[in-house]
Structure formats: C-alpha cells, structure tokens
Length: 416
Image (cartoon, rainbow, N blue to C red; front, side):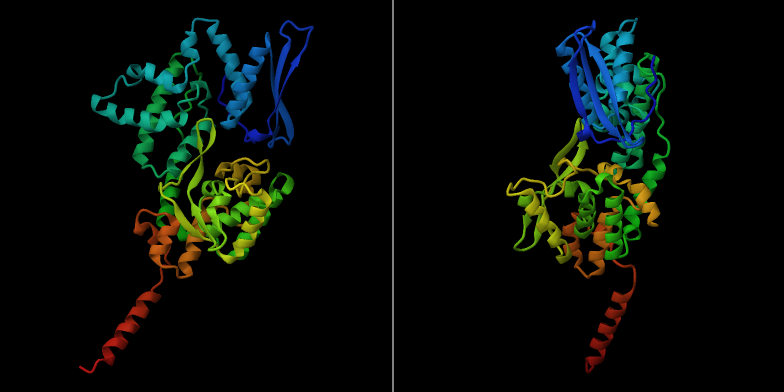
C-alpha cells in the first residue's frame, strides 16, 4: 500500500488550472489534468489520470479541485485514489476503504474505546463529537497526515481550548487512527502530535503578557509591511495593506478579510465589524465574529487614505471586500504567511517570534498607551472580560503617583 505520510506543499488553490483532453487512440481516451505553481521548487507541477468516459474524467477533476480548495495537495489525493483502487480489488471492504474519518469512527467506536474505563467514554466522545469530527471528519483516514494534524491542533489552540480538552481530542483521534491502521486503511498512525504543548504555552504566555508581542512603533510597522510585499510573488501591495490595517484597527486577519464596503462609514470614520473569515470544511468560510456581536472600530487618520483607495478600487458594490488576495479571493492567516514568506521576513527583521495575530496585540497596545479609556478599549477589542483588556495597560506606576499627588493636594487644601 502506498504511504501518505508526506506533508503537502503550501500552494494557492486559486492558481489551479484544469483541463480534460480526448485522445482517440487510447484505451482510456479522456485525460484529466490539474496544474499549479509549487512555491517550493519555483515551477508548475501537475497530476493527471486517464479515464474511460467523460463523466469519470469530470468527476475526478471536481474531486481534486474541491480537495485543493480545502488546502490539500492534489498529489496526495491522487495517491489516495490509487491506494483506494488497489485495496478495493483485494480483501478490504470497499465501503470501509472509502469512508470518511467521521463515518469510520462512528461505525467502529466500540472497538476504538475498548480497554478504557466506562467513566472515560463520555470525555472521549465529547472530544470526538465537538473537536475531531468538525475539523477532520470530512477527510478519509489516509489523508489525515501530519501537516493536516498540525493545522487542526493550531486551530484548537487559537480557539482558546484548554490543554486537557486538546489532549482528550488527540487521544480519541489517535485511537481511531490506530484502529484504521489495524484495518489496513493507513500504514502509519500520525499521532501523537509532537510539540503542541509548546505552542499551547506560547499562546498562554501571549494571554498573560500581550504587550511583549507588539511592534514598537509606526515606522517598524511600515518596514514590516514593505518587506512582506517585496517577498511576495509579484510584489502584491495588498499584503502590506492587510498588515497595516490589522495593526491600526487591532483586529484579526480573518476580520480584515471579512471587511466589506458597507461596513465602513467615511463620515464618522468607523468600521462596524460584523464578520470574519475562518477555515472550515471545504475551504474558507465567512461567519459571525468570535464574540458573536458586532462592534465599532475607529479608523485613525493615517489609515484613512488607504481605505479610501480600497473603496475606490473595488467599485460601488456595497458587499465587495476591501481586502483580498491577488486574485480576489478570501484571505486567512495561513494564506498571508505562505504568500509573503512571513517566517523568513520577520526573522530577517529581528522579530523572529512575531506572528500574524501579534498585529492585533500591536494595535491594542498602542491604543492603551494613547490613553483610550479601558471600557472603550474593551469594546474595540471585543473582549468578554475586562481583565483581558487590562493586560494591555502599561505596567508602570504613574497613575498611582498621580493618585497620591491628587489625594495629598485634596487633604492639604482642607482647613481641618
């Protein structure tokens, strides 16, 4: 059986080119082909397959395009289809071989849970139902490869899940994939996931000391934006605009992607933030904000010319996105990272620990230092707890000294 343990190469699904050729002299005359640029080798690569009918050719092409839009390398999907053809010709049940992870797990959960104490079943099943299935359930077990697992765990950490919740989700996932290995669906169980605890701790440190992750000033932000543009393919100016807008509004990359013309009021220069773009089964999706409530974001003067230019560029459609990728598609933090070679750029600039989400920390830190009242800052950030917003306040004692001076003046002014 073919191994599928190689992580996919990052690529942009919008760059896919598909064609179907009819070759009269071949026993399987319909040739389907997908081509796309591979940033790792600096050239275009392709996968192809010959089919006996036009219907089969179109179905194969549609499957690979859908997988690519979900950020799976079509080469891996092609290898899985080949493996599936081989296994269904043998003793393996075709229905078992073609099942998704969710279907396979639900059908075999009694075997998967064997050996566990009954009191543990509810915890593991909750991790399966709430974490594993929504994130990975649509994939066949053979396509749950290390790179896909890394992104799933990173998403759980970004969602603020606790370490125990993530651990339980990975435990039931690992047991499911182990049963799939025993059934011959995969050769190697890709769990356990290594290093996720370190990423989790970094996320916790971020919550405790978000000021330490902020860029120091406006000039540093401009330098970063220009460097990212220079490193991107075709020097796409939009990447620098996204970074600048995220830092100046203290918002997430997904929220910038959801920014539409109708959300901007150029009279009061406020942005009513109503939606965000997030990864989901089948690709990027638009949904409500993380807090599930709209909030108003002030647009500072240095950002207004940029937004005015974006409004003029996208036209009169009120639902047009102000910020998109080079081909007009939705953006996400992973798309920005891959397109701009983020990790290389920030390391070269001396910000090796800077992540895309730290642009939000930058904006909130600047606003706190500018003296924006705490309750206003909480609204801009969309924080549910005031204690979260308080972490952005400068940890000095000037306000205590001012209180001491005011109280002393008040007491000495009284003629007691």
